[in-house]
Length: 404
Image (cartoon, rainbow, N blue to C red; front, side, top):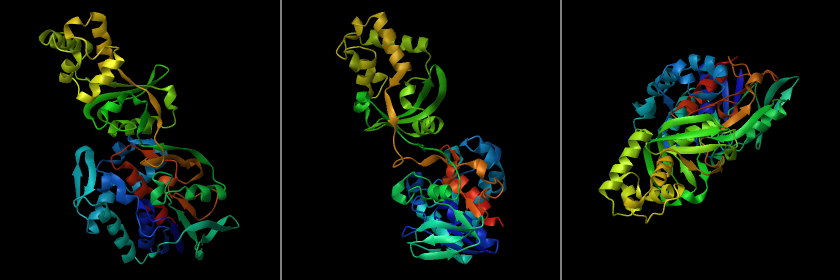
């Protein structure tokens, strides 16, 4: 059987390898000049390739498509991914949060290992070859049309990625192929992405907070609330907490949410108030902007005082009880004026994609066109950060590759 794989990223390379290892003739079509362009930028160039946890725990981190992915994650779990890379000569290490990286800290080594494994299995890798359409006949695929001619195939695996980081080649080709084949798409949105806010926190640019609580509410209902790391940027906020919030809330209109930061989650309001009283008493003749440096990084003092409607020059001994209560609220529930999520250009993954109801979860095969498969980011399944999305790519790619 001849299989054509469209896309030389994580899912496509795994699909090509597993298909060839199962004895199939495989052609891998990649429109870029090299394989795995998106892999090169994952994990800040280090490539967090999976998460070393059991399948059940893994599925808890899947935001959309968990039920559909259950079979794939059990069939090819994180342990199988780690075994694959180590058996093919790439030593791994496990870091905080069970994140798995190559010992070399080089994402390029992940791509090289996948490419080498494919070539050893005889995969015909064709770079600079863009698929332009999928050829079908009587409800079954018969090949791929490319910018260089026709590639005949009994099966076609679409592993084109989504819309995230289009500079790496993820320009939505797979969605077009899916629609042309009669598939429907779930709504698309950038996920694992920063939040653009109003300019009240511009003085805090570059400040990273290790232990704060970020909460998002809509109509009084808590949509997201977690403690972790947050980074103030030139456009607003980012960092692990914000990325996670975007994954949970990417389909919620930002203007409908009230997003707040608790700068002092370790202190309840009573304890924090007592701390304020003590600080103001000890430094009674100092301006409040100086006193607040004991509680906040310098760049956050002005925004917090502004939120509390307190003059930075006000002396600590003249702060009223009401003003202190306002300051307490600003410290425990600092409201961010969210404008919108950043775009696909900066998103780690795409939420949404080819509808899972139209795919066989055991094989990733289309229920509409025989011999047509979809895997990786192009399908409507995504997860939180920590190696989970690449594992989804490997697991679904593996199933698509071994399917008959």
